[in-house]
Image 1 (cartoon, rainbow, N blue to C red):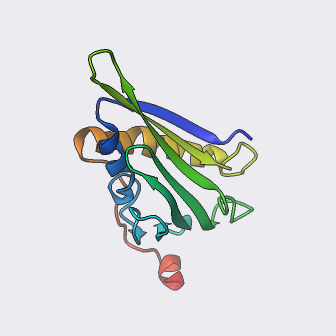
Image 2 (cartoon, rainbow, N blue to C red):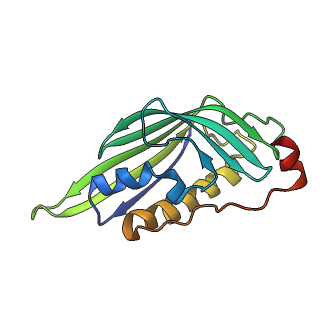
Length: 161
């Protein structure tokens, strides 16, 4: 299975990467409700009337790994509205030390089950690329990511609320 994966390296320690990843409001979306930093916690993501999902935090290993399980998903723009349902999102954090003891940290993001056969694959992989390689990387390096910010609800969104 060719799940979507992207990797970047930063001049920060693994703990800084872990802290940023678990702060999904800081890099993904301010429209997240629920905890993203506790194993077993469930959170909801919502972006306008295009995408909403419910995700459970399944694994947190400080400085090493974060894993989520997509419990429910709805896209308004695909034939199969539930394409992400039952997929996993995994962040693997690896210290890259040099001979002087300094070094960098590699963050590998894999959306296990987001495959090229999915109708949303192109849009979703581009979106993840922007959030992971742009916003998350910036949050780790500078303390400021570029998450979606809250937007005024449309009429159809208000009807769903």
